[in-house]
Length: 150
Image (tube, rainbow, N blue to C red; front, side, top):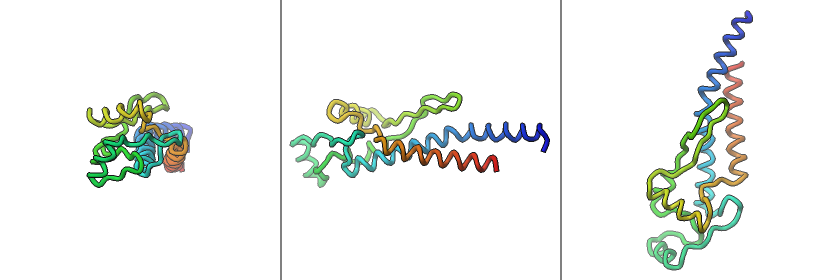
């Protein structure tokens, strides 16, 4: 292989890594969203390990009448909030992809904003959730790197 061949191969591989960077970051964000949704659904509390506030007595009664659980806040009645939570690429620059985790729709944004005073940002991941997502991200990127440079 000539120096020019090696240089062209390296340029091509770096371009392919850059092309897959946003996709891999979105996959990592989806991993984190799944971890957060699971924690919320199982009553795992907030990102700092604390319990969420209880449902108000009135709202707890309404939930119970609808056959919904009331033992802990799960932020789930119709599933619309959970379904609306999606990653959104905010910015991409050399080597950095910034992604927001936000609910889609005014009603769902209002639900999350309404919880800020009582329970903080319910969509914020725990340190363990972040670590697990980073580990999965690293594995994806290393596999991509190996594929390109093997």
